[in-house]
Image 1: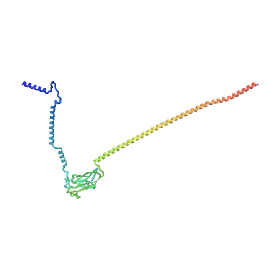
Image 2: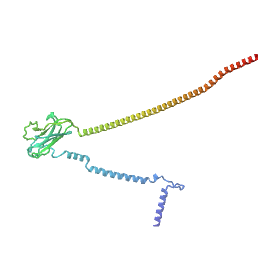
Image 3: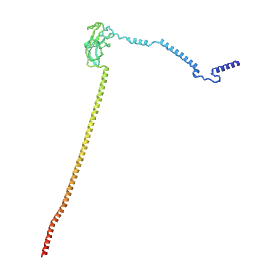
Image 4: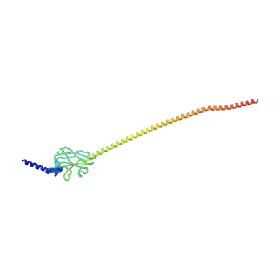
Length: 325
């Protein structure tokens, strides 16, 4: 038993030494990580592929065993296209409609007319109405169509339709087959009841009305903006005018001030010149006054000199006479 265990251990050691990559010199050769985990990674890849194939088979089977979207869409179309009660019932139930004493009205693009039941209650008969242009009554293509609501005996109801343009229109109500009406019947055996003429002066569809209102609001906004700009421009012009007037007033005041200053300066200069002139005159007068005494003295001196000369001559003559004696 011990030998078997020993041999087993030895064999394991030999296998380990042989697989450890030892060279002849006893050095261990390191293997790369790719070689080390190559077998393990290969097993994981195979397992992942098997799992993917399994899920793909499950999904494919579920699609093959379930109903498709086309099936549901077809059913929906069929269900929506089948409606009970929309077929016109041509059999007469003894009701009788007329427009006697009816009233008509217009609301935008919608026209209305009252209609009365002078017969028995409406139970199953279909009274269909058509709206025509007045000049194409029962000859042209109808503008609109509909069915009269169920009316009891002696009850009055209202029918309506929408038009696309202004004009004159008339309703035509088709009687059920078998009705005893005396109107002229068409090729299918139906007779019709004409309504009063309805005049539509102006008409706008809701979309056109919304567009028209929008355009009107835009125009109103533009007008308001333009008025505001004009007001601001007027205010600016008025302010500029006021500023110009103010500047002109200031300039005029400045000119007046300068003129007054110039006038004052001229007045001062005039006064100064007058003062100077007066002073000059006073000086001249003073000089004249001073010169006149001098002239007087000079004249006196001049007068005296002849007198002295005469006196000297007299004295000389006297002296000469005395000498001669």
